[in-house]
Image (cartoon, rainbow, N blue to C red; front, side, top):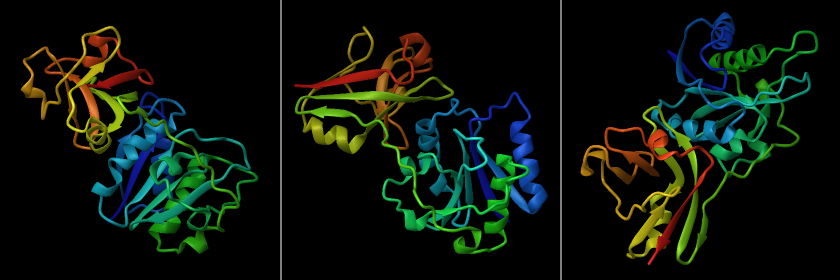
Length: 256
């Protein structure tokens, strides 16, 4: 059965997700749809990219990944489709896909060719793209190569010889705080040195834990999660609320 994943900023309190699913199924009924997340902060393509890049390759090749975040509602706006690593991706040409794959080029990206002059609804164009791929059409049959592929540059850690300034990019359901710093860069800059991680006005963290249970219940810890990103957490607690940390704030790591 054809798998279709959905990542949107539609939320779950309205009917928008149901309308999208219903429209997709009206074009092809034998699809299995999996929700990655519908709680992406409104228009936040960086957060959406984080979810997609850490989930898409856990699905079988051939899966169609719909990313409907920061959608524009003008009749002339482009929705695109492309294939990468055996997976298919559909979404708006707004820079989201350049945050997931930083080496994409125009020649790989196809505009979904859909006559929307009279009835432009994003669910119609998305469902059209899904149906085309699910029916085995090639990318050239879905639409022409885009004239211009929109690119965005994600927030990167600021690195000096003795310091890293990183940014909080996600707070998960458990209120663990995810930072845009991966283990290889941290270890490269650390080079065997001691470190102090400063966040807000709290005492610094100076140890990397392997898991949450390495710290006593209620204590603050720092670890690298399964996706390789640095996390600030509290064993059996909600770090974001208790520490006053919010998305887009910075943390500072000093090496000595």
